[in-house]
Image: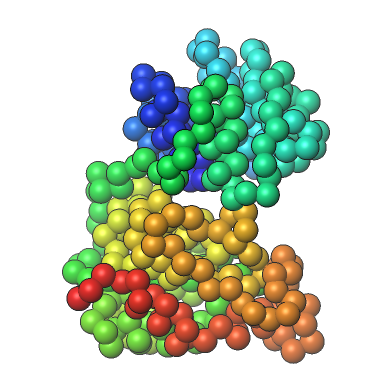
Length: 331
């Protein structure tokens, strides 16, 4: 999602440009949100890593290699610049543009690139990608704010076992690290505050464990609904219809930013400097605990229960609701 504004910049500078995008099979919906992306080439890095011999012998990797080299591209750019993407760059027969050793995310990824660029790595990830794309395609970096360039309203809503409420908020309670999770009791209290103000609440999930968590939060109020696992296109359609969102530091927080809805993202163990939600109507609540951000996956403090993050427990429900209410559209 952070790469989308770079494509918008390129399209504004080179109107007839088109992109093919290599992406992990779990995220193939995302590139096609942008109107300048014509084709997606799927990878399966995690499975290939687990079964490299099988992936070669059953021709998954050779098939990918054939797809990757089927077109004679004018320019090939590795926007990710880590070891996984460098592996893909090595598989491409032609020359690849990437970042130099001082700018790439993981060394020695820069060895995979013939053309190497230096960028300011202290700026937000979105601005890094915009700067890199401008250098690689030789246009002036625009002064305008980042524009994701997508229209999520064109995606169809999923069929659900309940009628989608007319006015609802999206509460993204899940995250990949324990230390990114706000307590269930806090989410439940926030649900009640939202319902008191006339909103329903939808709670998405990405797996069975997260669905159970969503159900537990939703059990506090009949106007809260746990969503089943949905495709990214379906989640995008729902997000686009939401009045606003409150999110953990996770991928769907960035989807709220792409959609442009009012959104509060909560940060404890992580910070916002390089990869915080970015764009219009995006606000952050950051723990003021002295040890935050620690970037640890388990809370090391002595008073942490089962490694649950103390920094997240210290973020008050009233603080989150008041911030969200201040940016929600007037009723």
